[in-house]
Length: 59
Image (cartoon, rainbow, N blue to C red; front, side):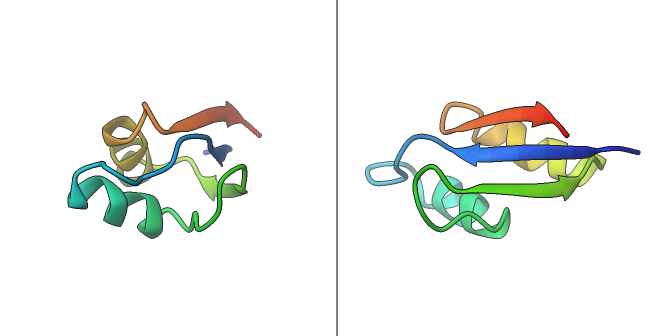
């Protein structure tokens, strides 16, 4: 499988705690930070739950 570039675009302040923990689990700590992760079903599921806070691109 390929890779996904995930960029943290919207603050987790005021969001549900499960969403804050998901963003942290993706390896995102600061706004506008970008991480590259393997494209897997588990990563896709995490991204789907916080899609309103991140931007996703194929790497």
